[in-house]
Structures are given as C-alpha cells and as structure tokens.
Length: 351
Image (tube, rainbow, N blue to C red; front, top):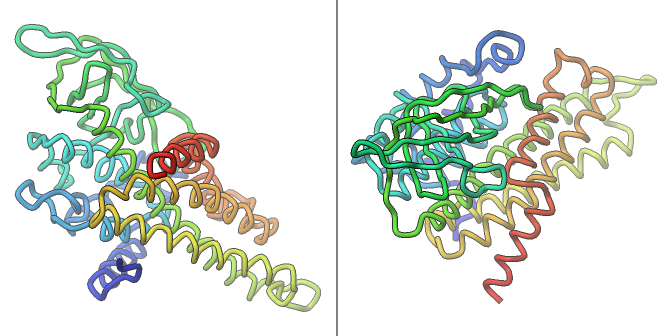
C-alpha cells in the first residue's frame, strides 16, 4: 500500500495548483453573474483532467483515483467554482460503471457537462420511465442535483433503472454554498435512453463509494487551505504588541488544525489507493474516510473563521466561503448520523 504521492503525482499537484493560482476566480461566481468558472473549466479540459479516470479508448486519460484525488484536493483548496465533482466524478463514474460509451467521450474531454440525478437520500429519484414509440420518456423530478443548473447531460437513477437524458426543465436553487450550484430538475415526457445493467442498485453503491472518496479529497484540500491561511494570519496579526500566534491558545488551535489535516490526508490516501488496487475494501474505506473528513473540515473551517477574528466574518474574506463549503459538503451524502450508520453497516459486513 502506498500512502505517499510519487514523483509524477507530486508534479500533477504542482501543475494543478499553478493552474488554479493563475486562472481560478471564485469571486467571478460569488460576486458576479457567472454560474461557474467557464475559463477554468476549459483549462482543466485542455489538460485532460475532466476525464482523468475515464478509459483512454473513451477519450479519457486512463489514470487512477489517486491522481483524481490529487486534482480534487487542489480544487477544494481553491474553492474552484467548476462542475468537476458533478461531471468528472458523479456522472463519469456512473457511465463507466454502467459500461455506457455514447456520451462518456464528450464528458471526458469537457465538451459536455454531466450531472447525476438521484433522490435526497441517495436512492431512486422520483422519476418514472415509460416506453413510447420505440424509446423511453421520463416524468417526475429530481431535487438538489449538483451542477444541474449548468449540465448538458443528466444520468438519472430511478426505480425503473438507469437512464441518460439531455433535456430537463431546471430550476436553480439558492444554497448555502455559492461556489457549487444545484438545481431541481423536472421531466415531462422527456426523451431518454435506457442503460441496461444487471444490478442497478449495485452501480449506485459503487458510484457513492467513489464519490465519498472524491468528496473527501476536496475536504482534505479545504482543511489544508484553512491551516495555511490561519497560520499565516497568526504570524502577522498583532494584538497587544504581540503576534497572536505567540499566544498559547492560538498555538494549540493551530496545532489541532495540523493534526486534523494529517489524519484526514492519511485516511484519504488509503481510500484512494483501495479504489485503484483493492475495490473489495473500498466500501469500508470510503465510509471510514467520510465519517472523519466531513466533520473535520467543518470543525477546521469554524476554527479558522474564529481565529481570523472580525475580518473572517466579512464578505470580502474567503473564510466564510470555506465555512459554507465545509458545512454543505458534510451534509452532501447525508448527515453525520447517516454516515455513522453507513460505516456500521460496512463494519457488520466484514465482521
């Protein structure tokens, strides 16, 4: 098992970090009229990052989940407002697991943006499928679809199976996190293509496990950013004639942030490695990682916000954006109780 990034993976991290430093503009979305950073999305696609784990014969890079997690760490660190998680993780993983190749190449090269439609509780979306004129149509709705406001392709999981649609009436939602869009999708006689698979529910479970690891990568990147910015602020902010970092309470808080960052990264590296090399161990590793990283990121963001003092609560500072991303990410796959219950079920399965 390899828990340390190799030279190529470190180079990938450096490349993505530089790209984000040069081109990522979270404020264009938070303060502007843009729904996502289209310029950054184009640059990610040009580097082949939008199809990182998609097989090469489908236009992807054919890389591993460790590499994708490296990219996601940097995206999470920068709060990059792009639909990477929805398209290059959720939709792409579903299509790869289903063996569907019709729209996957377009997602892999970033030509189209994909989104996954499931229920709030990660079950079948309240959508019905009906055969009509030799094809299928969808009726119903899907709530809280990540990046559903900008997606071109919708991968829909319903009680009738898996479907791919390229049209829906979308209603953008106002959510806590302004850096990751969501929308409600409505289908009314919408043409769709059915994707047959022997075990539709098993596909969803696999997608959720991989998504849990991918989300953890974002969270790990976010924790690292909170640590970096908070320690730097503690060095330069002076109160009562001393840098606040010289006070014991602040030192201890920063030490706790460092400890959290190290533990979260170790869990992530293990889970990403299992996704590539030991898929049978992935369900337990994914559940374990998400149980820790979700609350850890939120606690770190809350601590960082507090240690920044009054400036951290201003709209112009990004500390509140980390806080909002941390809380929304923690709840993305259910609350902490649901994550614990999921881990308990996985532990029961290996006992």
